[in-house]
Image (cartoon, rainbow, N blue to C red; front, top):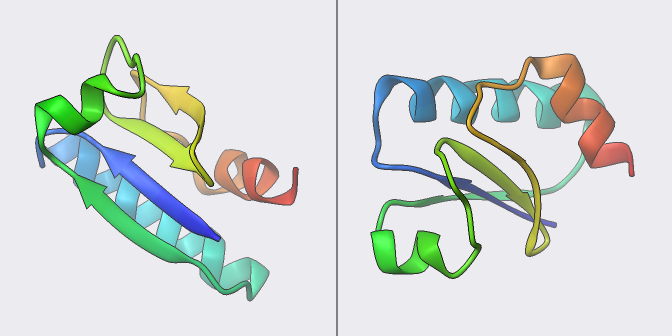
Length: 77
């Protein structure tokens, strides 16, 4: 599983990455987290606001910091 956190590297993006790491750890799943900060790469996902969360090339959330439980639900889908 490949998870991408899209954003400029701001405080919100870092918090989303932290919450994602916690969710992966709590579910004991194997996943790679990539930070995408290049705006050209972010634009490819048609995301209107960052931070955004992408799981296996599917945008599951954008414009907010998801809580750990929300991310766990995304990962289970």
